[in-house]
Length: 458
Image (tube, rainbow, N blue to C red; front, side):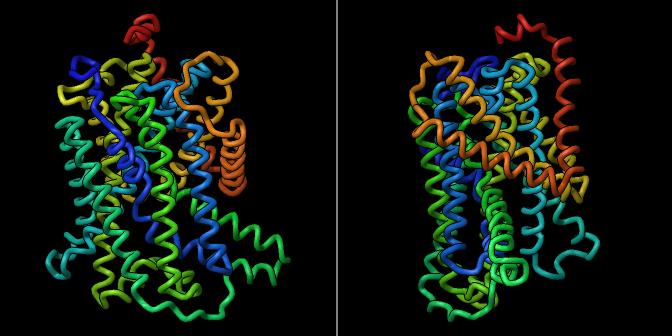
């Protein structure tokens, strides 16, 4: 599959892109903000670092489970491929539609955030007041257009941009880490964290447990995106080897970087100051370079977001392509251009995300997207267990380590997260179910346009 043809992809990717995809799909501006959220819940630096390590272990267990599925079923489409194989076409449609919705919501939010950061870098007074209010949204739309055009050029252009952006992002963050460790260590301040205060007010265990749950939820959300390589499974030249290495290596790289960033922030900022800051990385940058630190960290955040936009713009169209190939969406979603890009699916994805950007405020949609993202690894580990039982003879180039412990742990954490969301945000979860249910009308449309027998031959 080295040459493009109608409805064919290019199998040219390797481990370099896989690692860049995992890093680029995970690390955004959240790591510059979330350390303050986590530190506000935990009373000691050791517990703060322990929470980030626990989040990395959760993501690693998920990667180990997903590596078995990806190596055994190296087809484009992501989670929908495994759901269809394990539970049939209906489940494949529900999971794929859910996955694509989550990507579009996330892409719109990331583009909007990048627009806000870009607007902050525009010198004051350069634009009229009315134009300043629209500048952020305009930058967001321009970024969507830019990365859509890059992807339309083909897989080679898209993969190269991903590798360079991920490398630049990692280098910028490592430079921040190195600069922090060159500064003198912060003087400890005696101020209790949220967990310590709650322990004195509501009992030693209940308050501490509640604070730890909040901290872990924030950490797990920051690790979202580690599964990005699976969307390109069919485009790796050696998927049975490179997909497991990309998934596991990507999580290890992200975990190491997150721990270094938090250790660096704890080195330069006392824990109470870290806990009280909405953007602790900016405080660290100001300690390094003075008043210009805010602009420096804004530029770093924007760079991190650019890599994330590129990853999502690449991955989401391949979900639609997989659904179209299975006959679960209309046939036009399967078109692939000469460069190996699912062109129609790309335009649909960018168009949907642009509409969300234009809609303006969509904080509730972002929370809804978080629910959908957590449900996907749960679906994945369920497929892993079911396929182990139903298809024991399926060739598996990579086997999940210590099976069945990893899928049980990932499933338990995901269920606990979703149960907590259902208890605290029942209307939000109901809205998520309603959006997922929209898959059925799409399925009926697809069946009218392409019969199941023809779908199997796509």
